[in-house]
Image (cartoon, rainbow, N blue to C red; front, top):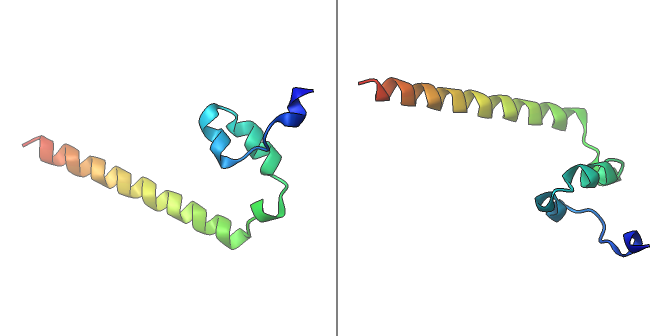
Amino acid sequence: MLAGCAAPPTVANYGIGSDSAAIRAGRNRSDAIITQSELDQHRRQRTNVSEEMDLEAKKRRATSRW
């Protein structure tokens, strides 16, 4: 009965531990659907960030040895 009073899942709910429920609820919304090119861009960005983080870690290790 109280479930009807609950606020709809939003990004704000991520902070309170109901992130997977919010993701499931928003998965089929039309504004949640991205194109293949957007997906490819997200993947490239994640790869770039990973590579940058790895390079920064290598730089820190190299400078801390001396």
